[in-house]
Image (cartoon, rainbow, N blue to C red; front, side, top):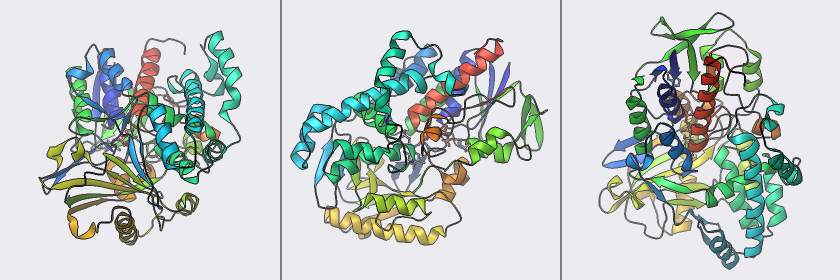
Amino acid sequence: MQVAVIGAGLGGLAAAARLAGAGMEVTVFEQNEAVGGKAGELICDGFRFDTGPSLLTMPFVVDALFADLKERRADCVDFHPLAVLCRYQFTDGTVLRSCPDVETFGAAVAAATTDSSRSVLRFMAHSEVLYRLAADFYLFRPLSGWLSYGRGVSREKGFWALRHLPHLGFAKSMHRLHARYFRDPRVVQLFDRYATYTGSDPFRCPATLALIPHVEHRLGACTVSGGTYRLVEAIRELALRQGVQILTGARVEGIAHDGRQVRGVMVDGQTRRFDAVVSAIDVNTTYQQLLDGWPLPSGRRHSRRDPSTSAIVFYWGVRGEFADLETHNIFFSHDYRREFGELRRGRCPADPTVYLYRSCSYAPADAPSGHENWFVMVNAPPDLGQVWEHETQVVRSAILLRLKSALNVDVAPRVVSERILTPPAIAACTGSHRGSLYGPASHGLVATFQRHPNRSRELKGLYFCGGSAHPGGGMALVLISASLACSELLRDSQGLQP
Ligand SMILES: Cc1cc2nc3c(=O)[nH]c(=O)nc-3n(C[C@H](O)[C@H](O)[C@H](O)COP(=O)(O)OP(=O)(O)OC[C@H]3O[C@@H](n4cnc5c(N)ncnc54)[C@H](O)[C@@H]3O)c2cc1C
């Protein structure tokens, strides 16, 4: 059976490796010259940067990809577990380092804020229940409507879930849940930030997403030795060893079909025939650009959802060494509600929360001696035609101001190299809808738990994986998504019932 995979991001590469491992003849079409998509690499002026993801959670998902193909991940790429998950700094100067061990983290929260260690432990127990509910019913399962959630779940797990159903807090926002557990607005803000792991607004996404702290603290959070791009390369090599053909500089212009069944893909004005197609690019882009003029109900439904946030990223080569900083650093804004209100209105926040990632802290070769490589990111609205040159300059000044007051250092004259990524650039170089980082935002229960399924309901032979499909964005979920799409395809190819 011949399969085309569109897009060589992490999702497309993993799907291709799995399908080839199952005996399919797989060709990957990637529009760019380099693979990786959002997980790219930038080398300039003596500095190396990961262009996108920096934090890998649930590393066992990567291990499973290699193990399923009879290889050992550790033979191909190394991970660094993080001793400090993140250094948080609030506008009043308070610094709080979070670490994987929940008791130590609780003690740090108690020492720096007016909340207690006990509140942290109670909240983390809640977060664990949410994760277990999501894992059993949603995360690792293909999705085909609400009824599919319970399919195949053991009676024991079913009863456990029923007992814990109130934890889901259907009507509550993530922020409201945090405000119930914590009194100190700084602690609430710290936990609210986890909404951004899905590109969502903590005031609008459901309390259910409060499962993320459990994932980060208890299921592993690490960086990839040598930078995130080494993971992309390891998965590309894995795919090649399985016999996948990867064509770069090969933009797919359309998906060929007869209204019922896909027939192949259009590349360079030619139709190339395939028995099945896996779209590992943004779902909206697939419908709007590759199935153009053939309006499918799923495409219309999907296009009505809010896109997740985008970002403006500055890749700065900075003179000096900043030993007090960690690999991952957050400098919070004064007012999170205002910040997300501005994003909702399509504007870049005037006082943004700043994320600073320094891979040189664990990969010293990423910056010349006496320098650091700073990936500085702020949340930005999706691209709606804003004047990005202006927005970027305003945001740049706000970041420099924020860093000056937080670190007591004027960073501006220390920036010796600069590259900038904006929402339209993200859209152009990865095909993501309006430059969103994680597909549709998780605003409301339906959007959170009804992402686009991994198999098309309308076109036989069409499958979806990646950050905008089920179960969601972020490196680990994208790899799960690839695994689910492949299971669906393999089951269909054997004529099996779901
Ligand atoms: C700035 C930033 C920071 C992030 N931080 C994190 C983080 O810390 N942790 C984390 O887990 N996640 C993070 N993410 C999200 C994560 O990067 C993504 O969820 C994930 O990499 C998406 O992978 P993907 O395979 O779904 O799609 P993509 O990476 O978007 O890949 C899609 C590929 O398809 C190609 N393509 C598009 N259209 C076509 C076409 N017509 N023909 C051929 N090829 C096409 C594109 O060129 C691209 O290579 C971040 C993302 C960004 C941008």
